Amino acid sequence: MAFGAFMAVFRSKFNLYILRYLQSFYFKDYLRESNSTQIYQLTQNMLRNALIPVPPTEEQKRIVANIEEMFNVLDKIQNNLG
Image (cartoon, rainbow, N blue to C red; front, side, top):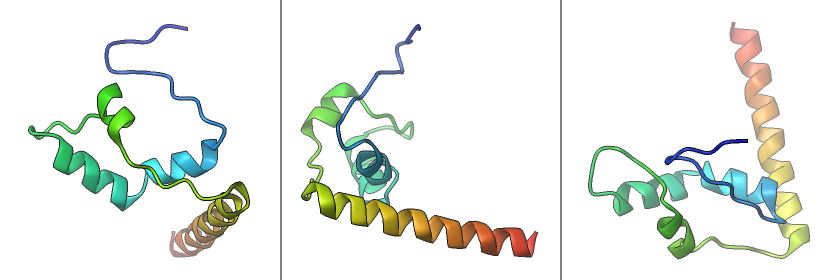
């Protein structure tokens, strides 16, 4: 497997929780505020310095389950509209 200059591997035991957090508006705002250009990029240094709230594992599972359920509802709505 090859990785270029704009790619890195991020491993965590909280994979789904971290994924959803990185997709959140909160984190996207952090990216906008952290970048001085119009190209939004996430550097390793930015990731190291990011304050990511990490609740207990059971709470993370509840959060992810709620988000996944909301996405399922949105998918059903979108399919009904399409």
